[in-house]
Image (cartoon, rainbow, N blue to C red; front, side, top):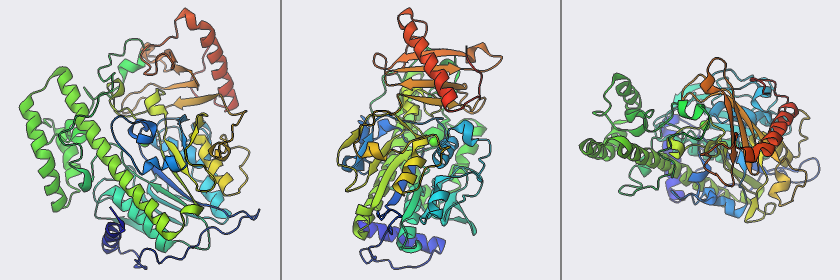
Length: 534
Ligand code: CA
């Protein structure tokens, strides 16, 4: 899709939302961006594109076997971080870590339910004070109104895929259309018409997609039709070889996916009132045209499913296909829309002065271990995509293998803006790594701590350490022996984490070393939360 389509969409948004009618012609923009920083260096713009639940193994630059993401692969023009990890693999806590540069136990946002203290220092507040224009558009998920932004336009909570409401300083408004397109259009509108062109910008463009319930946009409803997406080799995992929590979760495609809500098998197969209600809530948001189009595509699939009468493993395999195709269709919209943003940067002449980063709040299980969702310290949800482009500063084709975490984002943004990092931030700037410097004193392990239990999906509380080759996880929960215990994985021999070697005598020395390292990390990051271990 080219610029023509982009303009059509922006005009449509103006009509529905009543946004300002600025100049529409592309290519007529003044070519202005950051003014000189204190050191005389030109301060770059930052376009931080962020999505929700986008696993690395659904990005072609990371070697996806199941889809192509040509625009996210902008990594090829810059840097790809191959060992990028979250510190608490769930939506709102990951965002709080990114804003503050501090682990969850320090910034206080340990799970999706508790409140984030918006009064604490965040990177965007510091950038704004230092002369950056700051904007936040899309999924925010921290309940309290955003602070430290010149402009914000955010989804309430998780937001809706179709015709979403947005919270703004002026109140709530609804936009007609598909959420990924709308967030992009609002981003383009602010970049083109809303900002102060004398100042550099920090734009946070944050997508809802591809978060559950994976509703594809009108442009991609039929993508992958008639194709079979490769299955993960552990789709039918039986959880032997691991501690108790893996078999006690509630996130399998087999037993915990709602047919109507998660798989769009509606309405006849949604045989209970809960599923019917879930679907009614999604369906109620469609316009008549959107609803007709949806049913035109999904009704024949559902009829076919009903006639197949699948049971057992065959039903799980079918559910996987339904789930993964919708998930990947949502990503296709994200990727297309990133293409629009990159096109605009080129056309406006800002590409050379703008750092573009793509990341997502944590990874996701794409049928791996039979699961959807995230939360675990296992690789698929622990890994976060992180790619960056900065022409003239980051060399094309840069690959970074150092272990990074979302605590590093705020220090990186501040460093790029020429702002000193506060001493109590817990991450490190990634700029030297982006520029290909081999940082000799870089961390050799990362720390993880997940808290949200008991809660949806029932993933036990755990913390742990990951090194280049090994991972040690400690599960703790009082009064339930199945939700306590240790796991240890040799990621070189067992990259899918199917067999814990915690009790293997051949690994006892390594296990003891990992415990010492875990103790050191808890002290280093000052984490006194959770049961301590012996
Ligand atoms: Ca998420």
